[in-house]
Image 1 (tube, rainbow, N blue to C red):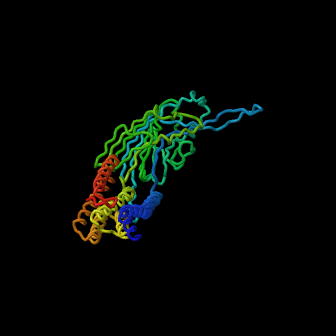
Image 2 (cartoon, one colour):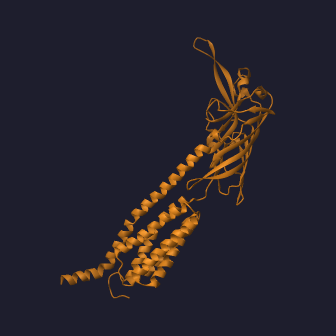
Image 3 (tube, rainbow, N blue to C red):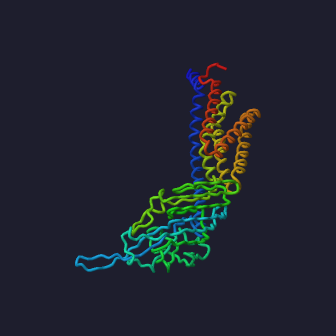
Length: 440
């Protein structure tokens, strides 16, 4: 009697127990997917370390700030006893007009299996300084050390300077030297003493500097001119315009990009002249970053995020087939199928480090689909079921492939696709005899 009751209980609740077991196995298989996620992150970090290593030997991302003038003067003060003494202070003076015309020449370097984006740039900076109104700053012209005025250009990494710098100042050639006298605007760069700076009392001064600057990934500029215009072009097809200002006009095509900026002093919180203060000039920097698009690690990381979807849908399909076809699938067979699905991601990661991601995805998915299809045939002894399962997996891998290629429409396309999959599962779940009745 007990045996009969036990059999009746198992027959009645076997589907429920099996569904609980399948759900538990899905959760268990999330553990290896978490390890795979960490593996992808580790390889991505290693790539960044290699990029930083190569960039440190070439030149870092560059920000060009300048030109600006450092004008020293003596301020007269008296102590408590009425004795006169002098304190040396500095006026920071920015140009009236700054024009930058530049070209970026990208270079792709390889270190081991990793790809690093470097660039060479050819920049021409021109513009002018108008006469300095010392009275507005409360400075006496006689206190200015006119023979000590320096013109400075801020450069993030001086190792990127590819040729000797010669500044054309009002028609006279001036040799630039490394270093800046003060770190109030920038901490690194080049500077030079202006021998005829006293001319700033009465008339405007023009400047021109041709600089060939190497860097990596990013090139930015600081709008120090009262009016700053920048024209930049390159053969790179994946630029990202960033910083404080976007281009007034940009054109990106398969041949590269062209971008123009036109920035007025009204749009930046920087005075044209000040004494001893330190405004956050570099916060106004803008420019371009040379992107690699979505690299293989980013795409693999996005693919791994769908691992639970792969495992859950595959196990649900197995569960429906074994329930409808009255064929028993051992939990170990579920685990083996789940492991095969997990190995897909390690295949994808390892292969995509050597060949294009799309081809790697094709190889990894075909290998995984073929393995699981053959295993499914060995379980159910039915090529029709195995073929249907092959179509299902192919559709699922194709669906995920489209998702990771999309950017703006990924959420919409993914939501609609998941809704359709859920509707199909709900439809076929109606055919299952969940309570062991005689329903067909």
